[in-house]
Length: 411
Ligand SMILES: *Cc1c(COP(=O)(O)O)cnc(C)c1O
Image (tube, rainbow, N blue to C red; front, side, top):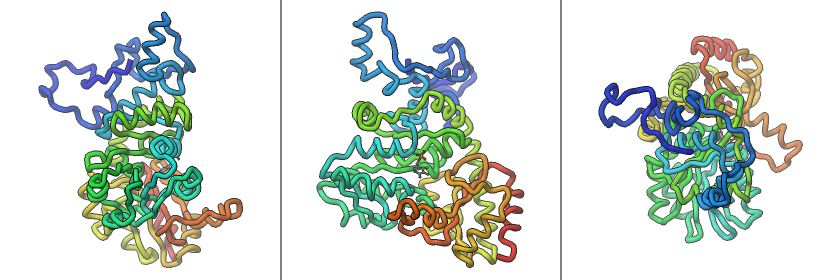
């Protein structure tokens, strides 16, 4: 049921260059789906079912022997297409889809780590990953060691013979810093430690960490991969054995954080236009970053594709182009950030990112508010009170620039 068709169904053999590998966009549209397996339906059908019935006990046993194709917590045909397609696009052997990005990260950590194990993480992480590593994992006896992986040699002092995993994001939320995947993976692999990269800020259209030596890739599919801000999802990609373990332990009984088949269908739809969308996100973000860099109200801008970015050379090596994510700060700091944001009309004041709509957020304001209910809440290491995170959407760049210009006027 999960045949991995390598060629698009509609093109005859003569119309294609013999044996030419299919391009990324073609695979984002066609990989792992053949309409002739589904009554000719061009769009993958959504299988709404909680369980599967078999013609005989023997067939039921055969499905069980294949690893849990009995019940929809562990298997759904629509989700299986998404998993095969995402794994193919990342250059991974296998993939597992989960209900959210945090479900993917939680299933990964709880599925691979045990009491007494250690995990080295980069000092700056997505807020909720930070909560998982600071508060969640230590409760289960898993030691988390935060270090600055901008200098990959810091890994050597942090790693012990109990270290099982190195975990980081690149580009890093919300700073848009860039970490050197190949350099970190080389040091970790030399010690037999697996490397997992949260590549949400780039998407596989721009960056494929496994090609640079990472073992595991994590995504919040909620962001660029679905791309339309209407669904939550997450995925883990890696070697067959790793994904099989996360499937048979992680999703079966540790988290049970299964993606809904409706979400899988929506994410498959969004994925078809991922490469096209990333081009426009990157184009708009570069236009905005360039404008901000020359604006007198702006103190600093972080966009990896600007030559002034400290990680520019690394970004050029491991990313094919820029995404829509950038960060900046004003001379007027915390208060200026709030004033600018309240003046904007096209940018949504919202968390999340990677949607068609441009979004903007100020982590320090949200952190202050959060402290009233979570007194332990704090900004991630390296995040200043002035930092504004911007997700450039798909609108016309001129309109986004005009809105920012009027917002910055006189600030
Ligand atoms: C959003 C996000 C997550 C969490 O994903 P959800 O789908 O919101 O659970 C993890 N990492 C990064 C970098 C993110 O931006």
